[in-house]
Length: 279
Image 1 (cartoon, rainbow, N blue to C red):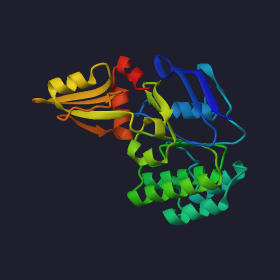
Image 2: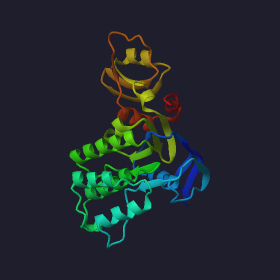
Image 3: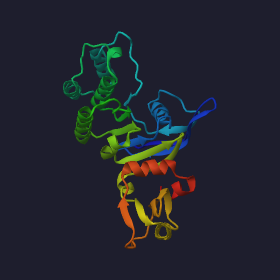
Image 4: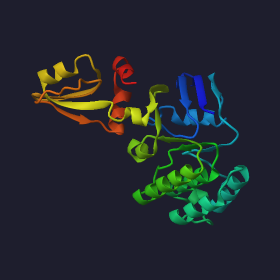
């Protein structure tokens, strides 16, 4: 069953952490919850996990097992790495000890070290290990790549995708580092100041926008009527990132595809009128 939020709103006094969020997270897919720090990603994950109540709106279809690994996860001061893993194994009915031990070995996690003495990267490794090994029907990973070096990021991606292929479930990856998760995602939701600014399948997004460069007047004529996400001018050359451009390209223009990261960054910063054309 898909997880659906309708009109989901969360206020902290005068701060609108979430503002009428309507999203549907299809079952058995890897979703990206993207946006800048403070966009509302962690608040949404906490509500999906039942750790926080919304001010308004509803959530349906969460399922029987949920695992949320937060970026700011806390543990008792006396807890060691091994304690956290054993506690997770008791709480998660679909726990895979094989996956947990594999990641512990690959990451080189020190089982006897107190969690409060771990580095930022090691805390992310521990959280990622718990999240992947949980095999929860709804697995929520909040900034799982934070503090990881390139080797650890590659290890996490490899193990996550391999285990997901064998044991499909709904996975939501929250990140402000879009490049780190782009290749894992099937669907993305982008939040900006608590509101959804992009919600689409990755395959539909790829190739949707292009960057057009060339003489100012030629570029202006070419992108007229298109959804404009970004523009910059350097002397006689204009560079515009746009959606819905014509198929026939004048010979004096250079048209290049836009990466997922560029599309998301430009969409989040675009005026509302043009942003709507990009959805």
